[in-house]
Length: 151
Image (cartoon, rainbow, N blue to C red):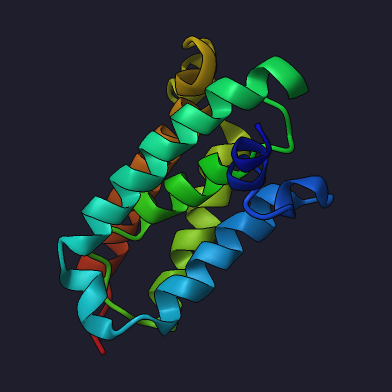
């Protein structure tokens, strides 16, 4: 069970106040320091899917101990952030826009995001952040498309 707690809390970040934002920020930092070719490659999809599957599995297990959708579970924010940055040009401006958009959609929970929490067990924990990531991805790609200069 300990491994599930470590993964679900992203190495203990979930125990810190504001852990969701910190976990999303951690993914952003990792994404930024990866080679620029990563942001246009399909490795992002594989990594995002892997984070999601592992997140569902771990959330199912810690749900029994910590309760339904505990704030200690922040792997969902990492998965959502991974989705939000899919195929986004490797630039600090787009990274910051993605982080702001994702946290907005994750906190405000518009357009069905809140309903995703009603899904059973780990899927409910991960679902709202996955959909928040998808909304962020869509808006962020509009920003990228209309951005006057691509670097």
